[in-house]
Length: 135
Image 1 (cartoon, rainbow, N blue to C red):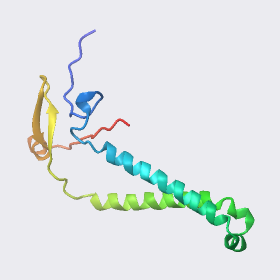
Image 2 (image 1 turned 30 degrees about the vertical axis):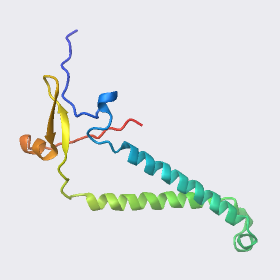
Image 3 (image 1 turned 135 degrees about the horizontal axis):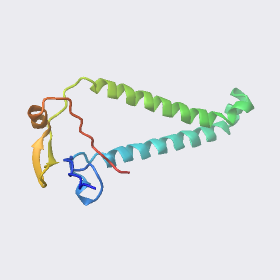
Image 4 (image 1 turned 60 degrees about the vertical axis):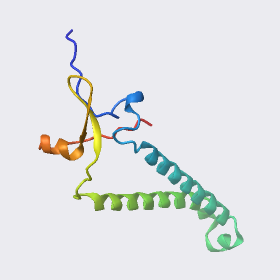
């Protein structure tokens, strides 16, 4: 079996200490946002559960629906959040990406510091940069 050549890759794309916090580093923010959303859904569920136990709710909503209302409310909150996120992402589509510095692994070993725009200028073809976050 022949030894494989090491493919050049962006720092932060892989595992281990060298991959931590360089190109990207947005994993913690995404995780915090996800946890916040989980808390919002839990609070919506508990809030609606408490609301359904009031006499006013029992008079307004048929009893068969009161048990389902907290879950339906949490699902609606999740759908609204998903819709808002999709609208925010669509506003970014077609806009120019900002330039930023990053370190790139060289094929012969070692690293070199470059910028996003320099990569695009040196190799004018479709470019994908994957900011890997291992949760």
